Structure formats: structure tokens, C-alpha cells
Amino acid sequence: ETHLADDQGGSPLRDFSEAMQLWSDFQNKTHPLSLSLTSQLRLILTPSQSTKLSGSFRTGKRLNIKKIIPYIASSYKRDKIWMRRAVPTKRSYQILLCVDDSRSMGETASGTLALESLVMVSRALAMLEVGQVGVLGFGADVFTAHHLADPFAAHDAGARVLQRFRFDQDRTDVALLLRRTIDAFRDARARNPAASAASAAGVDLWQLALVLSDGLTPSSAHDAIRRLLREAMEERIMVVFIVMDDSQHRKGDSVLDLKEARFVKDAEGNSQVVIERYLDTFPFQYYLIVHNLEDLPNALAGLLRTWFAEVNS
Amino acid sequence: MESSVAQVKVNFTTTHEDLQLPETKRQLLVPADIKRYGLSRILNSESMLNTASPIPLDFLVNGTFLRTTLEEYLKTEGLSSETTITLQYVRSLLPPTYETSF
Ligand SMILES: [Mg+2]
Image (cartoon, rainbow over all chains, first blue to last red; front, side, top):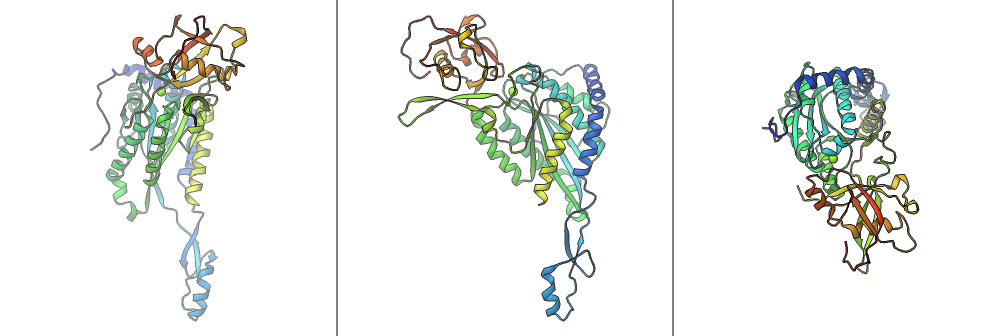
């Protein structure tokens, strides 16, 4: 069973017809961006040609140098000395979109930017049909706004997701989000019908979490977050943090400029003021900073391309 | 999850022409348990106003002097640490007192 709170209790939901209107407004506004993201992700997420040459065959594309000596030594009997371009394994994805529902998102335009991004990215993924898409909300607690197992294409699915976001949670616990994300993916891997027959069918299951947030979480939690990111990596879960930085309307208020002050005891035991750039201790290896929605398709595609290149190398 | 020390985002403003901060330094994350003295030390530090000799500062929040920690202030106002607090700093008119840490 799922570990995620799924109750409709807690905060009252936004009005459904209002959420429907909001979804279609965002959908119209972001449609060209969704199309752009879809076409870019198609190339990255569903490779039609494997770039690697491998295997041992009687005929092929390139000689496997390591097989030459045994070939000669066996009086030309061990003649599987060729490598071929391998048929790419079909990939299936489970993708969780994790949206920051904390109050800091509602106090700025970051909340709106996150919801627009959510609509844009989720529609691009639905058009791609590469697997399952789920939505989590997080803040002081974590809730499921859309289950991985449920289809996202249904007309009202998106509106039901938007209904859940009110940006009124009193903390931003990213460590808790990661704990629940790892648990949800572990659970989903076990339940995924494709996963059980995956190895036989040659289907590769990939799990990806995209976090949409203003990036503000207590620095004292950064070490715990780093440990959880290592755990996620060991389970082959990729986590991308997308920092919503709507600083164009608020001068000098970009997360890029944000500093933090701490009091640190020096060698003599006197407390000293230390001021550092907030992002210097930011624990996410893969993160993007988005100032405008228009930047997101290229930035996200670029980052995923880099990541797949690293994984495949 | 393990407990984490809360941080609050503050936005510094002042009417003193000679004590203005550059725009990129006006937003700062500070420990939530900070009081007037800690804030004054931060503003006097090298990375902020970089004053030749410390200028004791007082802080106005919503028109009243801050006398508690920021955390306590937020609590009495029914706000959370997700709220950015605007702090107006002014030269302290009170005689300096000895205070431990902040
Ligand atoms: Mg927040």
C-alpha cells in the first residue's frame, strides 16, 4: 500500500470549475511550449537507435579486437568476432512531478509559475506516452495530487490536481519530500505491471522526479537532503530540482543573489558572523533556475540530455 | 525527519541615506531565533554595511521595535517562517547594554 497521505481532508479544495478554468487557461498559454518540450523529450527519452556497438556475431559493423587472437588461436573456428549496433531496449518511465505547496510560493509569483510549469510539463509527458505520470504536493507534509497508476489524459484529471494546491503549508520540508518520493517509487516499481515482465520483454523502467519549488528550504536540512539524494541515486531514481525564480518583477530578490547569515564559533570560542551565498550549499546536483516559463523546455531538455549522456557513458 | 533550525527570510530597509545596502544585499536568510543584537551584528559585518566601527541598530517591524526573536514575533502575529519579514533598521537611540550572544 502507498505511504502517501491521500486524504481529501486538511485544506479545503479549490472550487472545481475554477480549477477547470485555470487548467484550460494555462493549457492555452503553454501549448506551444508543451509541443516544443514533447519534441525535444521524444529524442532524449525514447532513443530509436542505440549508439553502442556490442556483442559477438559472425557478421557485423566493427571487429571486436579482443576476439582476434582467440580467433587465430582457434584456427579460425571461434569466428564470432564482429560487433553490431544493439537494438535499443524499450524504455518505460514513471515520472513524479513534485510541486511546492508552501506559503512562500504563494507570497510571490513562484506559485503561479510552478502551476503553469506543471501544466506545461505534464501535458508534454502525456503527449509523449512514455509511461506513468504522478503529482505530489509538499510543504510541512506530502500529499498525492495524482496517482502514478491513474491516467493523466482524462479531461478533468488536471483540474483535480490544481484543486489541491493552495500554497498555505507552513514549512518547506524537502527532506520529507525525498523520503516519500523514494518510498513511492519503490512501491511503484513493485506494482508496475511492466516491471514484472520488464527484463523478459526488454523493457527498462526509469524513475524520474521533477521538483518545482522556489528552492527555499532550511540550510540545516541540506546534509539530510544530500544523504537522501544518494539513496535515490542508489535506487536509480533521478531527481531534478527546478527552481522557480520569478525575480523579474522584484529587483534584487533572485535566489541567485540570496545570502544566508550564520553565527559560527571561532578558535577562541567567540561567535562570528558568516555570510554565504545560499545556493553554495544547495544539495541538488541536477538543478535549473527558471526565470521565465519560456526558458523551461530548453533548459529541462538540456539537463536531461546531459544526464542520459552521463548514465550511458 | 530530524529537526532543522528554522530560517527566516528578511528584507532590510532604512531611511538613513548613509546606511543604505545595495539591492542584492537587502534580502537575507537569518536564523529564526535571532534578536535585535544578532541582526545588528549581521548588518555591521564586513559583508553587509562594513562599518568602520560598529553602529548599534534597532529594528522596526510593522512600525514597532523588535524586542523578541523573529520566531516569537511570527508566532504572536500568527505567521509562519515562510513569510518574508520586512525590517527597517535605524540607529539605536538606547544606551548600549551588555548582551550575551544574540
Ligand atoms: Mg517555502
